[in-house]
Length: 154
Image (cartoon, rainbow, N blue to C red; front, side, top):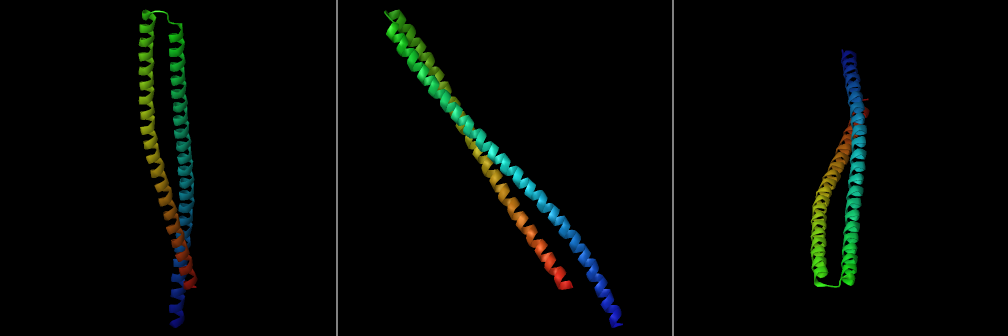
């Protein structure tokens, strides 16, 4: 009778071990999936940071070029003007250039806001990467616990 009971316990242990092995395999697959997802998020964050930096730098250069062009054009036209009509036309051109500069400033502000949005997305992605890392750690702990239970059962 005792041998029969022990055999039943042994069979239960074998079944449980099989279930735990299967669960461990599933958890390892999930960890690999999470690792892939984390790598994807990190790549996306890097791409967003690079794109944001490029946009801001390009706009800065364009604004600088526009200011320089405005100044040169204004100085050149003033130097060549001989009468009030020419000076009035220059004033008009200057106002147009100022308007263009204000438009560039508005574009800068829009890009700054877009940059803030991108920073928010990057922060959200970083938080998701952290969450995935924690989830991976939790899964590893479960696997370790399952392995320890397997060892105890034998």
